[in-house]
Amino acid sequence: MLFKKPPLASDDRRLSPRKTVALEGRIFLPGGRAVSCITVDVSQSGARVKLGGNVLLPERFELSIPPEASRRPARLVWRSQDAVGIQYLDG
Image (cartoon, rainbow, N blue to C red; front, side, top):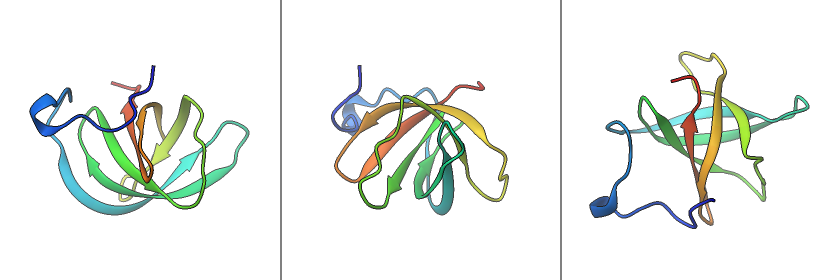
């Protein structure tokens, strides 16, 4: 089940510490379509990204964030009005 919004800092359930960033990235959807995003924070286990427009993400997709630029398999964990939280599936 998806959370409606990110947990409060006092209720933080992240698996690893996060780092605040502002990096352009790309989300690759099943079928090959890619959408732009802005990565707001990252950790070893996931990220929070902002999406432009009315993009509906599937449960699973791939995320690419420079400078690495490799595609990492991910799953949608929560969604708010202007951002989504993802968890990396490659460990």
